[in-house]
Image (tube, rainbow, N blue to C red):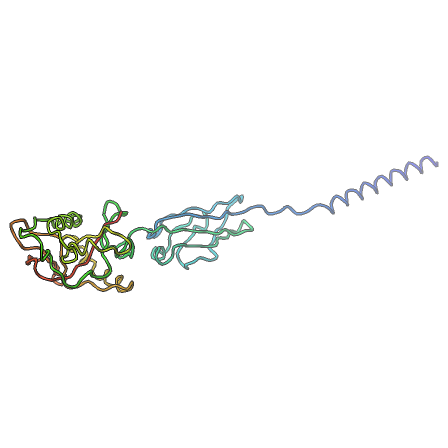
Length: 292
Protein backbone atom coordinates (compact mmCIF):
# COMPACT_ATOMS: atom_id res chain seq x y z
CA UNK A 1 0.00 0.00 0.00
CA UNK A 2 2.88 2.39 0.86
CA UNK A 3 4.56 1.62 -2.43
CA UNK A 4 1.39 2.46 -4.34
CA UNK A 5 1.16 5.78 -2.47
CA UNK A 6 4.79 6.60 -3.26
CA UNK A 7 4.27 5.88 -6.95
CA UNK A 8 1.18 8.07 -7.10
CA UNK A 9 3.01 10.86 -5.28
CA UNK A 10 5.96 10.68 -7.68
CA UNK A 11 3.69 10.77 -10.71
CA UNK A 12 1.80 13.74 -9.29
CA UNK A 13 5.06 15.60 -8.61
CA UNK A 14 6.34 14.91 -12.13
CA UNK A 15 3.14 16.26 -13.64
CA UNK A 16 3.37 19.41 -11.51
CA UNK A 17 7.02 19.97 -12.51
CA UNK A 18 6.18 19.44 -16.16
CA UNK A 19 3.30 21.89 -15.99
CA UNK A 20 5.50 24.41 -14.22
CA UNK A 21 8.25 24.09 -16.84
CA UNK A 22 5.75 24.51 -19.69
CA UNK A 23 4.31 27.55 -17.97
CA UNK A 24 7.80 29.04 -17.58
CA UNK A 25 8.57 28.51 -21.28
CA UNK A 26 5.34 30.24 -22.27
CA UNK A 27 6.23 33.25 -20.13
CA UNK A 28 9.52 33.82 -22.02
CA UNK A 29 7.96 33.78 -25.54
CA UNK A 30 7.82 37.17 -27.34
CA UNK A 31 5.82 38.35 -30.30
CA UNK A 32 7.71 38.15 -33.64
CA UNK A 33 9.16 41.52 -34.69
CA UNK A 34 7.89 43.28 -37.87
CA UNK A 35 10.96 43.24 -40.15
CA UNK A 36 9.13 44.32 -43.31
CA UNK A 37 10.70 47.57 -44.57
CA UNK A 38 10.85 49.95 -47.53
CA UNK A 39 14.16 51.40 -48.70
CA UNK A 40 15.26 54.99 -49.15
CA UNK A 41 15.49 56.12 -52.77
CA UNK A 42 17.94 58.55 -54.40
CA UNK A 43 18.36 59.47 -58.06
CA UNK A 44 19.82 62.19 -60.29
CA UNK A 45 17.96 63.44 -63.36
CA UNK A 46 18.25 66.38 -65.75
CA UNK A 47 16.16 69.41 -64.92
CA UNK A 48 13.01 70.10 -66.97
CA UNK A 49 11.74 66.49 -67.31
CA UNK A 50 8.41 65.68 -68.92
CA UNK A 51 5.26 65.27 -66.83
CA UNK A 52 4.69 61.57 -66.21
CA UNK A 53 8.37 60.68 -66.61
CA UNK A 54 9.34 57.69 -64.47
CA UNK A 55 12.09 58.36 -61.95
CA UNK A 56 12.30 55.01 -60.15
CA UNK A 57 10.54 52.58 -57.84
CA UNK A 58 10.54 52.24 -54.05
CA UNK A 59 11.89 48.82 -53.04
CA UNK A 60 10.29 46.76 -50.26
CA UNK A 61 10.81 43.31 -48.72
CA UNK A 62 7.19 43.13 -47.60
CA UNK A 63 5.23 39.99 -48.45
CA UNK A 64 1.92 40.51 -50.18
CA UNK A 65 0.38 43.59 -51.70
CA UNK A 66 1.66 46.91 -50.39
CA UNK A 67 -0.07 50.26 -50.61
CA UNK A 68 2.36 53.16 -51.04
CA UNK A 69 1.62 56.82 -50.44
CA UNK A 70 3.47 60.14 -50.26
CA UNK A 71 3.13 61.60 -46.78
CA UNK A 72 5.04 64.79 -47.65
CA UNK A 73 7.13 66.30 -50.43
CA UNK A 74 9.12 69.43 -51.18
CA UNK A 75 8.21 71.27 -53.29
CA UNK A 76 4.58 70.26 -52.86
CA UNK A 77 2.98 68.63 -55.89
CA UNK A 78 6.22 67.74 -57.67
CA UNK A 79 5.84 63.94 -57.49
CA UNK A 80 3.25 61.22 -57.52
CA UNK A 81 3.55 57.54 -56.60
CA UNK A 82 1.74 54.44 -57.84
CA UNK A 83 0.02 53.01 -54.75
CA UNK A 84 0.36 49.42 -55.97
CA UNK A 85 3.89 49.39 -57.46
CA UNK A 86 5.73 52.19 -55.67
CA UNK A 87 6.79 53.77 -58.98
CA UNK A 88 7.66 57.47 -58.60
CA UNK A 89 6.85 59.80 -61.51
CA UNK A 90 6.95 63.52 -62.31
CA UNK A 91 3.63 65.22 -61.54
CA UNK A 92 4.42 68.93 -62.06
CA UNK A 93 7.37 69.32 -64.44
CA UNK A 94 7.60 73.07 -63.80
CA UNK A 95 8.89 72.36 -60.29
CA UNK A 96 11.94 70.52 -61.64
CA UNK A 97 13.92 73.69 -62.44
CA UNK A 98 17.52 73.59 -61.20
CA UNK A 99 17.70 77.36 -60.79
CA UNK A 100 14.69 77.24 -58.42
CA UNK A 101 14.88 73.77 -56.81
CA UNK A 102 18.14 71.87 -57.14
CA UNK A 103 16.72 68.97 -55.07
CA UNK A 104 13.25 67.41 -54.80
CA UNK A 105 12.51 65.38 -51.65
CA UNK A 106 9.63 63.28 -50.31
CA UNK A 107 8.63 60.83 -47.57
CA UNK A 108 6.94 57.56 -48.59
CA UNK A 109 4.95 55.25 -46.31
CA UNK A 110 3.48 51.78 -46.85
CA UNK A 111 0.63 49.92 -45.18
CA UNK A 112 2.68 46.72 -44.93
CA UNK A 113 5.84 48.16 -43.36
CA UNK A 114 6.62 49.90 -40.11
CA UNK A 115 9.16 52.41 -41.45
CA UNK A 116 9.01 55.26 -43.96
CA UNK A 117 11.40 55.89 -46.86
CA UNK A 118 13.13 59.13 -47.80
CA UNK A 119 13.15 60.06 -51.49
CA UNK A 120 15.90 62.40 -52.76
CA UNK A 121 16.01 63.51 -56.39
CA UNK A 122 19.01 65.63 -57.38
CA UNK A 123 18.51 67.82 -60.45
CA UNK A 124 21.33 68.20 -62.96
CA UNK A 125 21.67 71.66 -64.46
CA UNK A 126 21.42 71.86 -68.24
CA UNK A 127 22.07 74.88 -70.44
CA UNK A 128 18.98 76.94 -71.23
CA UNK A 129 18.32 80.14 -73.14
CA UNK A 130 18.41 82.95 -70.59
CA UNK A 131 20.71 81.24 -68.08
CA UNK A 132 23.29 83.56 -66.55
CA UNK A 133 26.31 81.32 -66.99
CA UNK A 134 29.64 80.98 -68.82
CA UNK A 135 30.33 84.69 -68.30
CA UNK A 136 27.09 86.10 -69.68
CA UNK A 137 23.55 85.35 -70.82
CA UNK A 138 23.00 82.25 -72.94
CA UNK A 139 21.18 83.27 -76.13
CA UNK A 140 21.87 80.30 -78.41
CA UNK A 141 22.32 76.56 -77.77
CA UNK A 142 23.65 74.12 -80.34
CA UNK A 143 20.61 72.01 -81.35
CA UNK A 144 22.83 68.94 -81.75
CA UNK A 145 24.69 69.31 -78.45
CA UNK A 146 23.20 71.31 -75.57
CA UNK A 147 26.60 71.52 -73.87
CA UNK A 148 27.64 74.06 -76.53
CA UNK A 149 26.31 77.52 -77.26
CA UNK A 150 26.82 81.29 -77.22
CA UNK A 151 26.55 83.91 -74.49
CA UNK A 152 26.57 87.69 -74.71
CA UNK A 153 27.95 90.12 -72.15
CA UNK A 154 25.42 91.71 -69.78
CA UNK A 155 26.50 95.24 -70.76
CA UNK A 156 27.86 97.02 -73.82
CA UNK A 157 31.62 97.36 -73.94
CA UNK A 158 31.14 100.78 -75.49
CA UNK A 159 28.23 102.89 -76.67
CA UNK A 160 30.15 104.54 -79.48
CA UNK A 161 33.20 103.36 -81.42
CA UNK A 162 34.19 103.03 -85.06
CA UNK A 163 34.16 99.67 -86.81
CA UNK A 164 37.63 100.27 -88.25
CA UNK A 165 40.91 101.54 -86.82
CA UNK A 166 41.01 105.34 -87.34
CA UNK A 167 44.79 105.14 -87.80
CA UNK A 168 44.79 101.79 -89.55
CA UNK A 169 45.78 100.78 -93.08
CA UNK A 170 44.41 102.57 -96.10
CA UNK A 171 43.39 99.32 -97.75
CA UNK A 172 39.86 97.99 -97.34
CA UNK A 173 39.41 95.14 -94.86
CA UNK A 174 38.67 91.72 -96.34
CA UNK A 175 35.12 90.43 -96.46
CA UNK A 176 33.94 88.36 -93.50
CA UNK A 177 31.08 85.91 -93.01
CA UNK A 178 27.58 86.65 -91.76
CA UNK A 179 27.04 83.05 -90.60
CA UNK A 180 26.43 81.73 -87.11
CA UNK A 181 29.65 80.45 -85.57
CA UNK A 182 31.99 82.75 -87.52
CA UNK A 183 32.20 85.72 -85.15
CA UNK A 184 35.50 84.64 -83.60
CA UNK A 185 37.27 84.04 -86.90
CA UNK A 186 35.81 87.29 -88.27
CA UNK A 187 37.15 89.18 -85.25
CA UNK A 188 40.62 87.71 -85.67
CA UNK A 189 40.59 88.60 -89.38
CA UNK A 190 39.61 92.21 -88.64
CA UNK A 191 42.26 92.65 -85.94
CA UNK A 192 44.93 91.11 -88.17
CA UNK A 193 44.09 93.70 -90.84
CA UNK A 194 43.44 96.78 -88.70
CA UNK A 195 46.23 96.28 -86.14
CA UNK A 196 47.29 99.25 -84.02
CA UNK A 197 45.50 100.30 -80.84
CA UNK A 198 42.73 97.73 -80.50
CA UNK A 199 40.79 99.91 -78.04
CA UNK A 200 39.92 102.30 -80.88
CA UNK A 201 37.72 99.98 -82.96
CA UNK A 202 34.86 97.50 -82.43
CA UNK A 203 36.56 94.14 -82.96
CA UNK A 204 39.52 95.09 -80.77
CA UNK A 205 37.30 96.26 -77.91
CA UNK A 206 35.24 93.05 -78.05
CA UNK A 207 38.40 90.92 -78.11
CA UNK A 208 39.86 92.76 -75.10
CA UNK A 209 36.81 92.13 -72.91
CA UNK A 210 37.39 89.67 -70.06
CA UNK A 211 33.96 89.37 -68.45
CA UNK A 212 33.54 86.39 -66.12
CA UNK A 213 37.29 85.86 -66.25
CA UNK A 214 37.11 84.64 -69.86
CA UNK A 215 39.45 85.98 -72.52
CA UNK A 216 37.89 84.52 -75.66
CA UNK A 217 35.24 87.16 -76.38
CA UNK A 218 34.63 88.42 -79.92
CA UNK A 219 32.51 90.72 -82.07
CA UNK A 220 29.47 88.70 -83.20
CA UNK A 221 28.55 88.04 -86.83
CA UNK A 222 25.25 89.16 -88.38
CA UNK A 223 23.53 85.84 -87.70
CA UNK A 224 24.82 85.77 -84.12
CA UNK A 225 23.38 89.23 -83.43
CA UNK A 226 20.13 88.05 -85.05
CA UNK A 227 19.97 85.24 -82.47
CA UNK A 228 20.58 87.79 -79.72
CA UNK A 229 17.71 89.87 -81.05
CA UNK A 230 15.42 86.82 -81.13
CA UNK A 231 16.01 86.45 -77.39
CA UNK A 232 16.27 90.17 -76.64
CA UNK A 233 13.54 90.17 -73.98
CA UNK A 234 15.13 87.51 -71.79
CA UNK A 235 18.64 88.91 -72.38
CA UNK A 236 17.45 92.32 -71.18
CA UNK A 237 15.75 90.86 -68.10
CA UNK A 238 18.67 88.66 -67.04
CA UNK A 239 21.24 91.37 -67.78
CA UNK A 240 19.33 93.94 -65.71
CA UNK A 241 18.86 91.48 -62.84
CA UNK A 242 22.61 90.90 -62.72
CA UNK A 243 23.77 94.50 -62.78
CA UNK A 244 23.94 94.91 -66.56
CA UNK A 245 22.04 96.90 -69.15
CA UNK A 246 19.52 96.20 -71.89
CA UNK A 247 20.58 95.77 -75.50
CA UNK A 248 20.90 98.98 -77.54
CA UNK A 249 18.94 99.70 -80.71
CA UNK A 250 21.97 99.09 -82.94
CA UNK A 251 25.05 96.88 -82.67
CA UNK A 252 28.19 96.49 -84.71
CA UNK A 253 28.72 93.06 -86.24
CA UNK A 254 31.99 91.50 -87.39
CA UNK A 255 30.52 90.87 -90.85
CA UNK A 256 31.77 92.85 -93.85
CA UNK A 257 30.19 92.69 -97.28
CA UNK A 258 33.39 91.96 -99.26
CA UNK A 259 36.92 93.21 -99.85
CA UNK A 260 35.86 95.49 -102.72
CA UNK A 261 33.14 97.24 -100.74
CA UNK A 262 33.95 99.52 -97.83
CA UNK A 263 30.56 98.96 -96.18
CA UNK A 264 30.20 96.79 -93.08
CA UNK A 265 27.10 95.39 -91.39
CA UNK A 266 25.43 97.30 -88.58
CA UNK A 267 22.51 95.39 -87.03
CA UNK A 268 19.32 97.30 -86.28
CA UNK A 269 17.63 95.49 -83.38
CA UNK A 270 14.46 97.58 -83.67
CA UNK A 271 13.92 96.63 -87.32
CA UNK A 272 15.59 93.22 -86.85
CA UNK A 273 17.77 93.59 -89.91
CA UNK A 274 21.40 94.26 -90.88
CA UNK A 275 22.29 97.35 -92.86
CA UNK A 276 25.42 98.21 -94.81
CA UNK A 277 27.08 101.36 -93.44
CA UNK A 278 30.48 103.00 -93.56
CA UNK A 279 32.92 101.80 -90.88
CA UNK A 280 33.66 105.35 -89.70
CA UNK A 281 30.31 105.52 -87.88
CA UNK A 282 30.31 105.19 -84.09
CA UNK A 283 28.01 102.52 -82.67
CA UNK A 284 27.72 100.13 -79.70
CA UNK A 285 29.58 96.87 -79.08
CA UNK A 286 28.24 93.86 -77.14
CA UNK A 287 30.81 91.06 -76.94
CA UNK A 288 29.96 87.38 -77.37
CA UNK A 289 31.77 84.14 -76.53
CA UNK A 290 31.23 80.46 -77.23
CA UNK A 291 31.08 77.80 -74.50
CA UNK A 292 31.37 74.03 -74.60
